[in-house]
Amino acid sequence: MTAVLLCSCGFLDETPRSQLPAEDIVADNNMLYLNTLGPLYALFGGTDFSQGLAGTYRGVYDLNTITSDEALLPTRSGDWYDGGLWQRLHLHTWNVGEGPIKDTWNYLYKVIVLANQAIEDLSGNEAWRHEACAIRALFYYELLDLYGNVPLVVSTRVSMADVEQSPRASVFNFVVEQLEQACAFLPLERSNTYGTYYGRITRPVAWFLLAKLWLNAPVYAGVENLSEVVRYCDLLAGAGYELESDYASNFAVFNENSRENIFVIPMDKRLYSAQNQYLFRSRHYDHAAACGFTGENGTSATLEVLEANNYRSLNQDPRFDINYWAGQATDLNGNPVAGVIYQPEVIALDVTGRANEKLAGARMKKYELDPSAMKDGKLMDNDWVMFRYADVLLMKAEALLRSGSAPEALALVNQVRKRAGATPLLSLSESDLLRERMIEFAWEGWRRQDQIRFGTYTSEWSSRPELPGEVETGYTSLFPIPADILVLNPLLEQNPGY
Figure (spheres, helix red, strand yellow):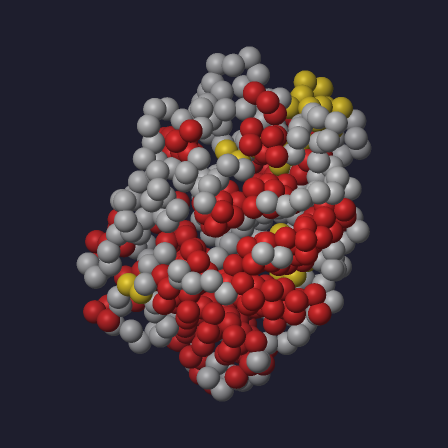
């Protein structure tokens, strides 16, 4: 009944693991893992639309990126109009029936329902049960961030009549409590390197998530406790995480030895099915072909990105050329690709009819091209980076800045900038920090959340020149509860403004 309530389609096609014979589930640890935690981790990445925390289109990543001032999918004549979807997402004019918003809701609850079953199956294994609780907490974190007031379902035995909407603050408190309890049982191991805990939620992963929760607590719960942000950041520093000397190495083909990456979605083209579709989506067709792949000539950087990076100035940020293809495109050997000279400054939401419509916009470059990638370049060996230590430093800097400790915050920001070879800042404001986050975390899926926290996600939209006329703003910091879900459960109320 819970599955019917929360997922309007698709989930009932799953085979409930509760139908597996109990004696088979607990026969040995390997079988136990394969029937409880294993299926949950397999869903962190994806191949289909709206599936996975990152790597696929129309899901968590796109809702956090295309709706921000970081990236857009410009309409290029017949390409990328898709019924106006990408324009609506970027203009904040989406509606309650948008497919990606509903499908992302269904995906997140699908994993939560499976996590509830795993938690019940693991009643005799305390450590793994708390790991499953941490996985569920991660997915509730995504729900409270995207949708706000959501049903808090923690059992497979809940009837439809008992499922009610929980206030956002209550979901926040639940997630924090679950992660804090799990920390006592999670191993103090690296999650981003090969081994038993590769790609799993370990204690440092939970610490990072707790720091992120407390940083956004004023948005999520109307409370502020910046000392908790600092505390969890310091725990991560004490655990041995540090900046890599080479910024780009975190996104290299084989990035499992990064000292900076804290949590990744494992990618191995011969072992796993999870894909990175974003490079494929962004590259011009001819550029991709010259590298032995295919492309869709889509996602591009905004004008705001160019401004933040001081594009084409003497003080252009060194990270720009690592994160973006701009100007002459080259193949895997560094040879120029004939006819492919990207035009970053002519980007717009619709470039149809322009002489350079197919080359408008700087493109995604951040992840090193895997020369042996398969499936048109979407199956790669670069692990997708979810959490890394540079974010720990900038989260701590933000907490210190908001607490009045600007000199210490400035030192942390300059530590990140120094690693990249960027000019040190002489002072630090909130706008400086927001700009630094745009540059450092380009294409990493944090921009929407950052803009909401700094108050620029809705307030700037009405003044942007590419917007056609008046656009209603102010409510879109939360996505709507999908219309189909409201029909299934009359106890749920729509978010304000929809």
